[in-house]
Image (cartoon, rainbow, N blue to C red; front, top):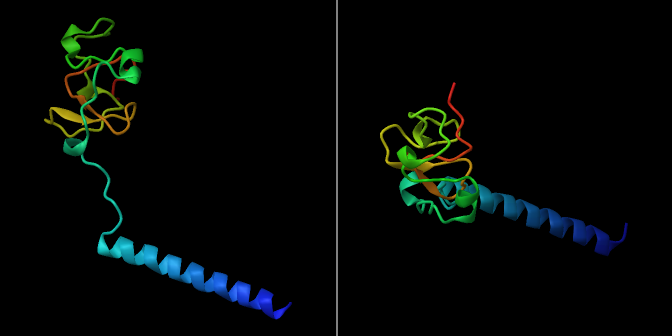
Length: 111
């Protein structure tokens, strides 16, 4: 191995150690961005292309195609909002909050 190869390897090792240390320090000091909370998420608009494709409505009582009158986002397997919250995250609409009383055609009853 040549002297240049040895310096390159040592330089890479120093870089990787520094990068790993920086990531660890950022995590410990809170420099890693936190995940969005439901109140921080923008509300899903019924005119959003994905919402339109899944026939999302903010008021499930006005939805056509529900299997039971009680089908709403708040009792759907994909809904991740807290009990009693008016809006919450949904796995089907990442980065958006859906109305707890809403509904879409992908509604899956929690078991």
